[in-house]
Image 1: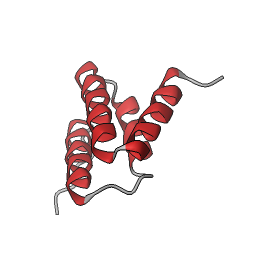
Image 2: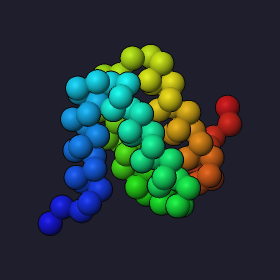
Image 3: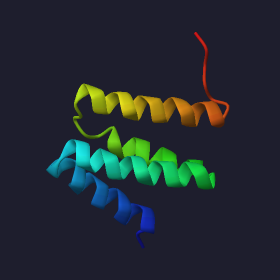
Image 4: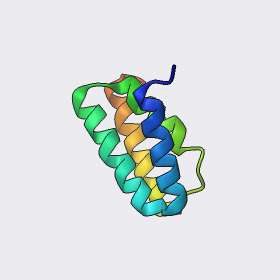
Length: 80
């Protein structure tokens, strides 16, 4: 049985396909909500889903920033 997150990811994917920046705005709101609640596993699922889309460079910057923030909080950030 699908989880609620599966429905959210599908909704966000369709939204991103329709309008990358509008969809990314909704994706960012969901990511921030999960982040603030400490649901890092859900954040990871959102990251995996958004990375399947071709996004403009400025949108990729938002995704990469979000990913870096998440990895830092999870203690997975690797300094080079």
